[in-house]
Length: 614
Image (cartoon, rainbow, N blue to C red; front, top):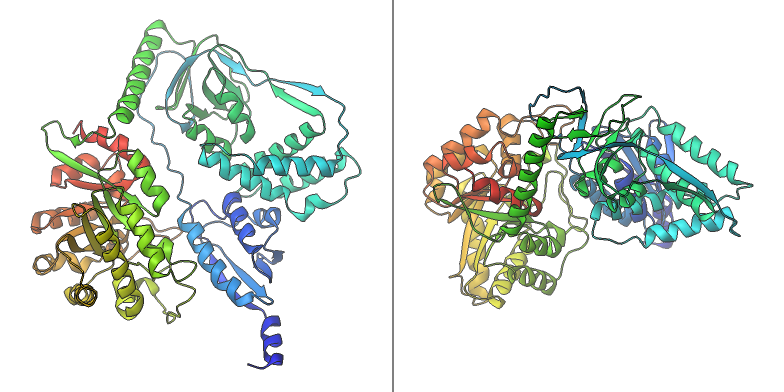
């Protein structure tokens, strides 16, 4: 390639279309992460959507687009590292969408009260009994020799240094920092009013959009900057138990109220997906949204967020009943956490194994701390997404994870569909979810597959020999695919003189054809694990990220398929899809005969306790 050609290529824009697949839309937190990633590259990177061209580092402008699930935008890269940036950012965005699960709609139980009640939307479950207290602040002005630019810089630094055990709070702080790092805030402000006018302009762009709930973040950074300038607003909080009634709250105020004797929160506006709502859930503060301008401040009230009722002036009997329920919940939570390391057995003494779905070493350690009996699904894609890992990198990572548990199921690389690798040119397909995906990709990219198998074998060899290592092939649809994959594994083991006596080989059941051929698979497969998310997708021919078409996870057809599988196979079988953790599915799955469930780590203590009552 000559010099002129290189210059031409560096200046020729390249572009791709990215589609928002998260049900939450392309909102502040993923936008902030994406913009931060864009800054890594020596390239001009812009985003084109809804008739606007926006610098991909400008968080406020991207947020103002209010890109919802199903909407797309063009990512355009130009410059020295345009090609590298495009490949990386495409994968990074796809991973952002996958890592941004929809906030679950909280199901309210049916309960009625004799006293006057107000109905609301539940933000965080629980029961609180205390006086209703109105949101109230005091204002104080101090003389500070800071310019507005210095105050903004101070808040940026403060947000960057905000580290605590609350992952959600950290992510929100980083997102607010990204807003303040926008060039909009680098201008010279003549006075405080000019700064506040800019904030108001940004808020007005969000008022009618999907992300109106992010207005509170602008209000929050405004208040933090003003505080640095000496204009302080302080919350007046009681020193005795109370339920706070507020039009809305700022994310930074949740930390303050969580350190007070607060028992619950009533918001008169807002959204269950707002940052305030997310933080209230993370702090386990019972909360509801009741969109009424006036809420009577009674000397005692029951906030029953489980049923969506705010009971005003409850009777003694209602208070006593609420206290009983409250105590039962507290005891249950405490018991679940205390007993998380104990085996889960049904009322009749039947043991149910509760394993963890993990994505890396950090989530493996979390699973260990939360009482996982083992690893039911180790997704290995995290090692491969940015670069091709060296053999020793894989061995080291697998070994560290294997050391934590005696039973580990590791899934070989699951690439294809909505996942690709920047260093491998996968042929373009009209229907990638029906093409070169999972085990088909590995059998096509044999060298990568063999190296991963070798790394798993070597890690297993370095670990304690008592450990049971299960290697699971994804997206198998035909018995020959399993045969070819296992033959390749045996070939690698023979070449490097590796003993496979502690290794088992199994498959993910995600494709309906396996259900019909399960008896044939039984002849060669050591175990199965059902990925209910993909199985549902292929049973109904509905892409699981489709913006409008949905299938309930407990649809009768899905449950029928699971019943057929457990009744037909004679090999060990588990469930590692979303269904395994759903409260409404636990009794049914155990009743069918399933005795191994694999879920995200945070669900383990409550799932174990739920099993003990089946």
